Image (cartoon, rainbow, N blue to C red; front, side, top):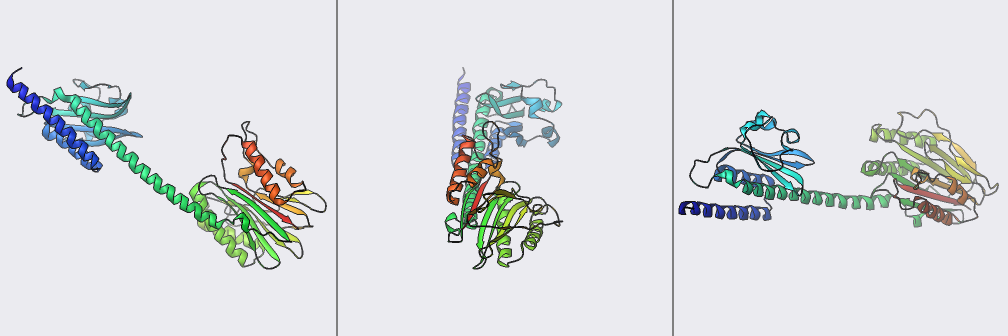
Length: 409
């Protein structure tokens, strides 16, 4: 080897080391993606005398990251899936099925393990200019640079995604805390000589679309509600939070239950634009007259156990769910007189529709069996949840779980 050739080889070796060091430092400095791509383009075009550069990378789908020295129609006419995927090693192009590839001299695939993550296409290599040794001999160096930069870009994407997910997680935690403030703590429910209430609430996600409430209207009347928004997640939780505010405002106005349902229907139609609806069980109990008024608006029928006759019935009188129709065509107001020892259970469909390993739903039978026992409402709630967990086994809850029980002394 001549002294001149040795010198050129040494120069290019030093150039490669310096270039890789520069790229690594740029990555460590967390340069934006566009700056990393500009650096890659500058090295190829100005240091290695390459006239055309095209870089694709895979990010859920193949995308073009860099196009330099190439007419837009040529770049847009190349598809990785049909034109490049069968190249699994550096290839000098002489002929190609896609005429757009004839503008390039080499295809350089970049693999991670056995999966292609990028493709570099280079063309118009000027081997006559003074300076570095012929570029065509150093395609592996270009491959190494591309690998480092593409992996760095992917790492930046993953980091940014993790930051975004962490921000969402914190927002969901805050939303969950806020929503929990709207749902009564079981310890705050009434427990006196006239009425005793207990409840259990478990959202499927951090926030949920189930809602229950219990409000003392005056010294004689209590109002309560169990509701379920169609769908899950944040949108359901937001609608439910708005619905909770409306329920409390309308209960405070002490309106008749049918009028309350009609107004709730109007509010849900305004807020959800017909895209979601809410099923609910709305009740009002007078401790003096011992009369229970209720409306079941498309919800799972609540279970009522009469303390005197020992009879168990489903409370289904009512109407369609709110937000289903512009106007509710007909509302039936249910009424019952409750003797001491009567018990009521309200629940959402996340309980009755929960399946076990054999795809058998939990249903309402077990709740009915628990209701007829001579147990307190707290014990009944605890037993239902225990049997619900036994039923699901190792499966996860697929929906929000809400259960509210009331014992009338």
